[in-house]
Length: 360
Image (cartoon, rainbow, N blue to C red; front, side):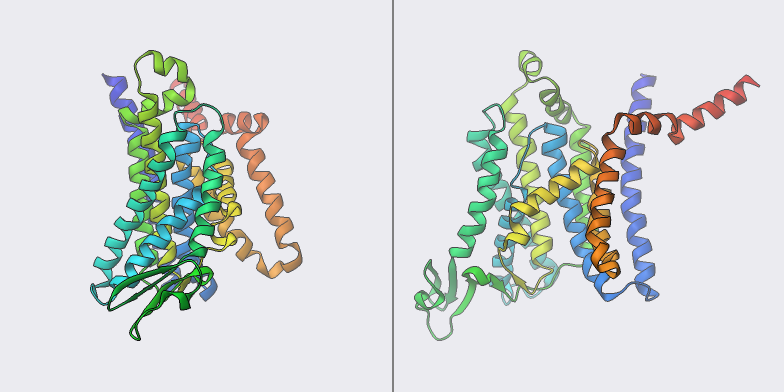
C-alpha cells in the first residue's frame, strides 16, 4: 500500500513538473512581452510554438506509447485546420462572439480529425507491420491534394461545390467564395492567441499524461512491449490501438484549429501540411525521446525557436541547426550519454548526499 502511494505521488509529481514548466514559460514570456523585450518576429512565433508542441505530444502517444509509426500527422492537422476554418468563416456573422465561435470551431476540428482517424484506423490497425506508416503517409498527401482541388462558395441559395474553378460555382451576386482551391481559405477570424495556445497545450498534456497512467494506458503500453502476451491475457488489441490513434488524431486536429485561426490565409501547401511537416513532427518526438512526453514538448519548442534565433548568422544558421540536432540525438540515445546521465542525475547525486549524511 505504501509503495502504491509512493508510486502515485511520483507520477503526480512528474505531471505537475510538466504543467509547471508550461505555466512558468507562459509567465516569463508575458513579463518579457510587457517590458518590450520580445521582438515582433518572436511574438509571431508564440502560437506556432504551442501548435508544434501539441503536435509533438499527440504524435508521441502513437509512436512512443502505442509503438506504431505514423507518417501522416500533418494530414490530421490539415483536416482539423480546414474544417474549423470553414466553420468559422461561415459562422462569422451568425456567432459574433469570438470565444464561443472558436470553442465550437475547436470541437468541429477535433471531431473531424478523430473521424478520419477512425476511418483510417479501422482497416489498418488490425494488421501487423508498417502498414500504418504507409497508409498515413498516403493519407497526408491525398488530403492535401483533395483540398487544393475543391472550390466551395455560399450565397442566398446555399452552398455550391466545384472541382474546376471558382467561376464554375455559378453563384448569385451576393455569393462568397469560401474555399478557393489552391489559394485556400482567406479571411479566417484571427481568434488564436498565446494564452489559448497555452491552455490547449495544458489540456493536451492533461489528456495524454492521464491516459498513459490509467488502466487503458497500461494496456496500450503492454501491446507495444509484447503484443502476443497482451493478447494472451485478453487485452483487445484493436480497441486499444484505435483508442490511442483516434485520440492522437483528434489532438492533431486541435493543433490544426489553433494554426488555422492564427493565419489570414490558410492554404494546403507542402511546407504547411506536406510530408516534410510530418517528418519534422516525428523529429521532435525522436529527439525529445520516444515515449517521453515532456521531452518531445521541449524539443518542439527548441527546434522551432532555434532557426529564428540564429537568423543573424545567415550562412551558418542551418549548419548550427544540424549540429544541435546531432548533439540532441547523441545526448538522448547514445549508450555512453545515457550512462553519464544516469551517473550524474540530480536524483542520484541527492541520494548519495543523503547516504553520506546517514553514514556520518
